[in-house]
Length: 439
Ligand code: SAH
Ligand code: SF4
Ligand code: F3S
Image 1 (cartoon, protein in one colour):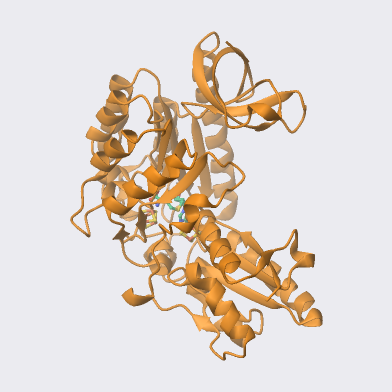
Image 2 (cartoon, rainbow, N blue to C red):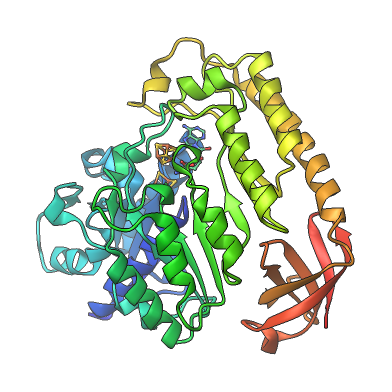
């Protein structure tokens, strides 16, 4: 068919991992990847709906591409979460030729091929069970991405927690856990083909196995850690309401699970947490943090915070600041609340002004920086293990990697170090990056 395609990806790791599947599907139907958009006959936008600005950016890029592609008779595809949400409107507005939701996007190659042959169907957003395509495609084992020793491994799809601000359950559908047998087999085969680091992915990995009566997440983590050749395991995301303390015990008993936990707090105020339908209290959250700190010798804790949820008062916000100072996170991801049509919170009356959200964001970031810097400084002089990821952007004679706690570190090295594991000594802290030397 000799047509070239280009995929532009927005949003979370789920989408990045879905883009790998789309690439596989396009390649297996005979399409080839283009170096950039200009060279492409088919442009695929894998979109995100989580916040308005993510959608706006994608929408204007899709519209611009369509105008450009009209001249060369090319095809524009909208896939991912926004495709699911906006659906037919993309076609009615003549902005996209094909609209493919997450259930079908891993079969994109066939869909595009049929369309080129004259197929009339343009909308593929059904969430019927028989349309769902599993993410553990054996073809992915041999496909190499930019970090060939690492694989994203989706263990669940969808989410049914309905946090009141969040669009994900509406666009991704209900929780679907993949069989532990398939997952472990996939990891084994990946390890045999040279993969040494994996990241297990789910909107809430702690709910793994609840829908299909499979093993619980801590058990899956334990079994994965016993697979020969797997040197480092990461996992995302842990919802505090379902967090099983045995996860921390498994991390502590195995040397190859990163002591690194992403535990979104969202807010440090109990009344806001309740309005968000998060189903935990700050006290419950802090018990998990205590368990991590008392069990693991060293640890990396990151979180997500939303400021300006409807009704958030100055007092609520101060409570969030207090938790930030108390926990001392290694990394925080901060967001201004963005109303999403169709979610419960978007209909609430007491919306917070944008100006206030901005002020709260900058206060939050400042408090975090101070707390994080104090913790990072205590690492100087320590030894760590590291996997080298890339040559430094600023200096060809330096390389960058992440320690087993996932802190970034820079040291002398060259391109041959990429994908290698070293023991290092941390000599200095610059901003949030360690300067280190190999030992
Ligand atoms: N499943 C994960 C998060 C998925 S979305 C979890 O439960 O933690 C990633 C992050 O985006 C969320 O943690 C939240 O902080 C943020 N987010 C989601 N919806 C949002 C909205 N409407 N406005 C602002 N931030 C939002
Ligand atoms: Fe959204 Fe909540 Fe599900 Fe996370 S757990 S994806 S925040 S609904
Ligand atoms: Fe965005 Fe969809 Fe992920 S809405 S955050 S790409 S699940």
